[in-house]
Structures are given as C-alpha cells and as structure tokens.
Length: 447
Image (tube, rainbow, N blue to C red; front, top):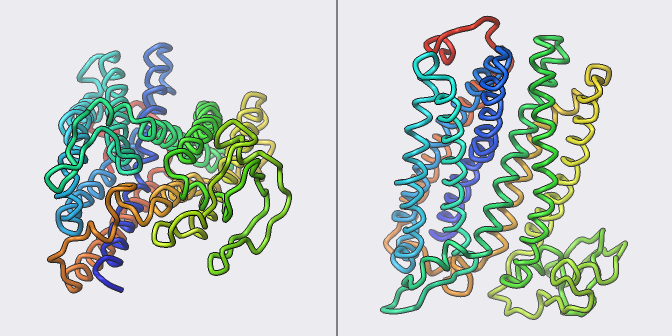
C-alpha cells in the first residue's frame, strides 16, 4: 500500500457509497411527481397518500445522499491536488454550475414540497416536486458531463503546463458525457421502479393496504419496464462510443486479446491476464462484436495486447463487472415485464413466490449500478483523464500515509454509520406503510 493506492481506495469507497443514494433519488423523485400529478388530476385521495408515503422514503434517501456527496469534493483538494491544478479550470466549471443552479433549485423546492402541504395550492405543490425531479436530474447531467470530459476530453488545449478550456460548448455537447448521462438516468429509474415494486410486493404478501400497493406496484412496473429497456438501448450506443474513444476499455469489457476483423462475441468466456488469453471461450457469434461496436461485421476490434502494458486496464474486474451488469439488465426487463403483466391482469396475489422474488431483488439494481461504475472507472485506468493525465500523476505530492489512513478510517466509519441509519429508516417506514387517514404537513413527515 502507498499514498496513491490508499487515495484511490478512499475515493472508491466514498464515491461508491454515495452512489447508493443517487440512483434512487433520480428515479423516485420522478415517480413521486407522477403520483402527485395523478392526485391533482383525479382528486383521488389514495394518490395523495401514495405521494406522502413514497415521498417520505425519498426525503430520507435524499438527505443522506447530500451528506455523503459533500465530502467527496473535498478529496479533489486533499488527495488529488495535482489533478485539480492541472484540469481544475475545466473540471470545476460543470461542478460549479451543478451547485449554483441545479442543487440550489433542488434545495429550494424540496423545502416547498416537504413543508407546503395545505399551505400552497395543489397545482403549485405538484409543480414543486416536478421542479425537484428536474433539478435532481440536471444535477446528474452536470456531474456526468464533468466525468464524461475525464473519459473523453474535448474542447481544451495544453498550455502553461495545464489543460485549459477553449470550447465550453464542446464540453456540454460531448457525446460521451451525454450518453453516460442517459445511461445513468434510466439506470436510476430502474432502481426506483424495483424499489417501489419490492416494497409493494412485501405489503401485498402481508395483505396490507392491498389497493394502495397494487396501484403503487402497477405504476412502478410500467416505470421499471420502460427504464430497463432504455438502459439496454442507450447502453448499446454508449458501448459503441467506448469502442471508438476508449478501445482499451472496450477490449477489456469483452476480453479481446488479439486484434481481429469480423470479431465474434463469445457468450461464455473467462480471461487469464497472466497469460494474455482466455481460459474459456464458448458459443461464439461470428461478427457480432464488430457489428455492435461499429455496425459493421467486418470492422476491426483492437485487442488488449495491441496497447502498451502500462496503458492497459485491469481486465478481469472490468470483464466480470460488464458481463454481470448486462445479465442483471436482462433480468430486470424480464421481471418488470412479468410484473406488469400480472398487475394489469389482477394476478399479483396469486403468485406469492413472484412477490417474494421481487422483495429479494430490491438490491439487484443497486448492484448493477455499482458494476457499471466499476466498468467505467476501473476500465479507464491507468488514466484519470483519458490520454492526458495518469492517475499516478494526479495524487497530492505533499500527502503522507498517516493522513490518508486517518481520513480513510474516518470516512469508512462515518459512512458505515450513515449506511446503517439509512437502511434502518427506510426499512422502518417502508414496513410501517402509509398513513391510514388524511394528515397535515406537520404529521406527514414526522418520525
């Protein structure tokens, strides 16, 4: 272990922990807004109760997500000072816009929504949660555009020993960042859909508030199915962009060791990094990999061995994470389609095993999101800014081992405590179920 490794480990722990909260915030904000819109349009009090119940879980998740996100940015100055000095003028711009525009709007209107029940009009109250959802997703846009620039830098020049922005429009229209944003947003919607379906399934198994949770399940099933299909569609475009802009990462994702035309996709494979080959390959589909990457079955796919050894990403974690992510994505489409079919035909309660399965599946979209980030960030190595700056050159020069160890332990303990609090509160209120009667704002969000 050295300062670089410990700093990478610390950032991995804090960012992956923060990302437990982000996807649910992205998706649940939209679902809650849809529920309140139904209440406003129909006047049906059940949708108001749905808005308050799922909104309470959204607020818990949102609050803890904010806390865990703030600490991440300090690390750019503490652990990654050389990175901040070299590309701070570019990387800082979208983060500043995220904080001053998206997060500000999000914070203002979430207060209006949480405390404005019976104090503002129904329509304005519904608009406020839509503005929260919009701001939440805009926040994700700016952050992912910043990350997209790290993955595929555009609109810059190297001058005075630093990277300087010369084209802001190139940054905000960077295809890599936009595809990453689209893929992540619908992944978050999938998390929210399965979160609502799983909790609804739990209550249906207990025969509690049956009409309430059948309605919640139906809305979430439509949401989850649409989102999980879009994850696959956008993911296909994103993978094709990776093949063009980060061919080493793409080769690691598919465990392609030697460059070849008409590259097949092996449905079963397992890489052996030490010997630069695959231990197992089976069920090849001729030309499919070339077609998926370049829409040309004869296109060349660069192999891992065509890159210098010091510019290759770790193959095994990238390959396994990508395969597991794709497999889970396929499972989500099948489960949400089955859930929607059973819901539309009034058959949910006749299949308790399916409901139990959905309860157990609540963590799976979270895992798929984490796997996606492993593919993205580990697959980018050894670069912190692809092709420009290596991760080993980005760490703070004045940092000492004792400082990193201390902050790493501190963050781990703090985040472990916050994780316990989050799971406890979400489980407590999810099991409790919705309020049985109409309540005011002071009671709707009490503990």
